[in-house]
Image 1 (tube, one colour):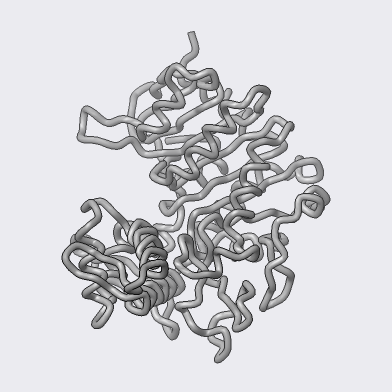
Image 2 (spheres, rainbow, N blue to C red):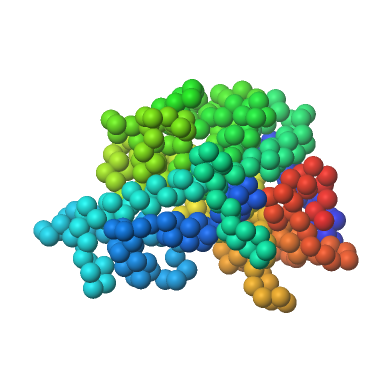
Length: 389
């Protein structure tokens, strides 16, 4: 029977795979002073003022208390579609009705507030720590943790660079992955042409297949704070601080409630298709997940459908913190389901703060104690030293 050290050695060998896909969720950017989704929701909603606060309050009243700002945007998109089709040009929200103009105005305001919060950083007050708010003049976002992660990741792959492929996928709107790669003198392939202002060209399969060493595909599944709609409706990646391309409400963040996403220029379908192709690779590969709470069913289903396919060669390693009250903590529900009674359970690993799960079995370290690899900073330490403690 395997013990913790044997399971750890098995996991370490997986991390030597020639092809790696890293999926980074909101938790990976928290220490960089970018808020988690619920904190972002509270911050954005507090900034939405009259006249947009009235429809926002009505919409939030229709949603569960656990709904976050992306849920609000999705609901708002549905209402805009309904109002656009109706004779009255309105959509009912509870006892009220709002026009297309009002709903689109709220949508633009929410996008603008999300963009400024993510661009410049925000940290809510916690205990004795005061609230921190970044601005254009004084941003507080810090790339140090992402740079440390990249250094640790590639230092351990120095002898594999010429025959390996590392891809980054993220649900985050921030630019920390791209920035950290560039600071490490690695080329970023994100679907845009090169240059300070780039135009959307997409993730072309034939081009991705020919990428040389030190070139890394970055797939931003939910858009980015530096993706904007230009005046002609095309998508560009823009610099901050210019007098043109400066309307933050034109930031392309998923889900959108504009006609832009109904055109062939919509990038989101292509982004998910690129992610799907990675998981369907015929080459044995590993999908490493960090900072992700398994709360996005769209992404969960993409991973699950890939794992179910005959001949699929995806191995999953999820670095997560167990949830629940002391003494009754457990892995996220979706992850537990993958590890229990599925045909692919032997290809799903979970590296939690309490144990290592492999092949449906749980392995605890001798002597107990917290395993730090569940956090982004702790993961960098593990990649650098091989120690999870």
